[in-house]
Length: 633
Image (cartoon, rainbow, N blue to C red; front, side):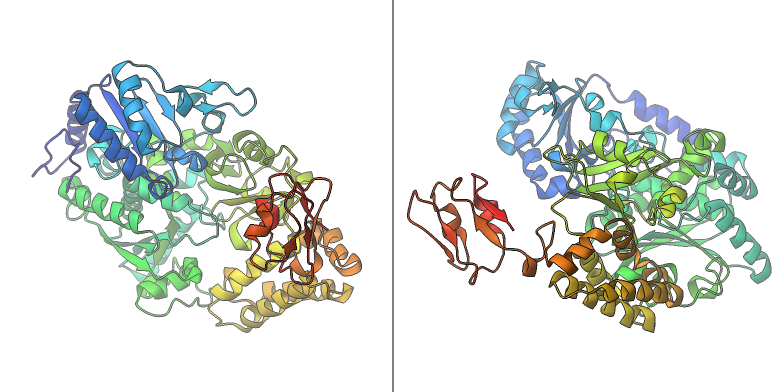
């Protein structure tokens, strides 16, 4: 069950006290040589797709050939080593700390020869400062990393998530042992309340208040009570929870066990979408390892407290990220939401008191119990404490996963950590909060990123998706995209969502075809209000947000579609024309060869023209042209 790199024999070693956990940790640390050569290869979903397994095999072969005393230990992270997704596969060589990007199998021999044997960096593989072009040796020196504050992600990229000894060496399960040995369940709840931790799944509800409400419900209804992890992350462009489950599964599990101890739960569930096979595998391994050591299951650490959990796989329905739909799915029924006149803490799973928190929320719990609520409230701002993990995607140079303190200005995330928009122009808008979030314009770039501030400008924190747009993105098309997504993912149970979203999307289709009217803008506003007021669950009530915010901040773009029958961003196909500039065209015929319609004509080495009647406006000609001769009118 344990990874082959495990240096400590854990067979039949069941821990019975906090002291034994500390002894094991000391033993693990003593068995490791901090100066030993070690090659850490990202094995998360992103790097895996880019070929990191082949990099590992190439490094192993090169190491065997040279006889170097080093081991290849994959550092597991869902979207690239330490979140720097656009630069993977990534390799870190310890103890030097050299940080290599975009590593290919063919680079393995050079890494072994030059770095592991001679101790020198392979300069061409180093990250280079985009402003100066100077190479940067270590991860800590790269702005993408050193401008972040990694709290929840502090272990990811440093530990092997399939080896519990790595977790224990890094301080894992210390919070659980501390709580069981020195704190009452009431004290655990009180500490979470004092920390002001708010749910990271989207709504930002105070976690401590939720736990307290569950205790009140237990007093009225009795037990059992259930604790549940919501790992059904489905927002487009979001991969925060997946990264945590894949890269540090024991943090989620420890948080869940602590919640169970605080509430007196004996059973829990981890609801993870089936599209996350690596997350499921790592959680299964983590749970099995924790059981073997007596950290999960019967009589945990010989305390008399017993708790176990199981994994439920979601079938990919976006609506099952909503609490009541998630519960009905676990119960074996279709994942449809139900009215919330009775809260889940009172009647949740199987009609019993249930506490549901998302992955990132549970991962914060051990940190709060271990370091204290006072430490936690010292991070972030008073009304939104701690940090938040975001997936930063779209038109930004540094695509990846970032963790920042609550209250940080929006532009610091995009311009400094994200490296700004390719080409150097200002970003046009940032869509936060997933498909139900809003689009924040560049003029509000100083907006603090916290629950309340984002709500004030018409958006939301959501689970942490952050999509950056530039002037080539059409806000009408953005609204259409998210409405189409939500229309397909709606369960269809309630009329406002089932019919309202279809009608809203139809109106935006008219705008993109140049058929919109001023009355349509009024109708969009009216429909949005009706859906917000009447939809059964949060999928519907928040669905109009992208449209409402784009109307609020980019109304002139809607007007251009109505009055000028033009799409300023050059996206809506019915309103644009592709044209070739004869002064720039060299007649290389590259665009003509790639055109699927064969509608580009002209002699070799002479300017070409596009037959606009046959053109389907696919944009391949513009993408193919190396001379910027193709433009959109």
